[in-house]
Length: 78
Image 1 (spheres, rainbow, N blue to C red):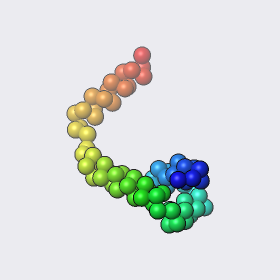
Image 2 (cartoon, rainbow, N blue to C red):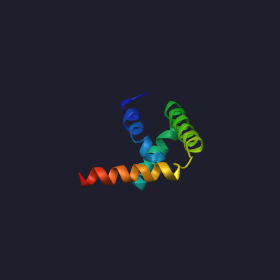
Image 3 (cartoon, rainbow, N blue to C red):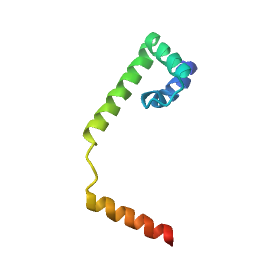
């Protein structure tokens, strides 16, 4: 991989989260189409992100959430 690849892959996470401006996203996507090593890296990261989102999508138990919020509010008052 080249320095260009390193620079573009640095923005890959932002692309996967939809956080890049349209022109940067288009440039990164164009690079991915022409660079098999970068495409493989991007594909792996996208699949991993999807798997984590699917497997870690459980809601926080209501009682735990209330305890944490109470703790944070008490800490903020101190």
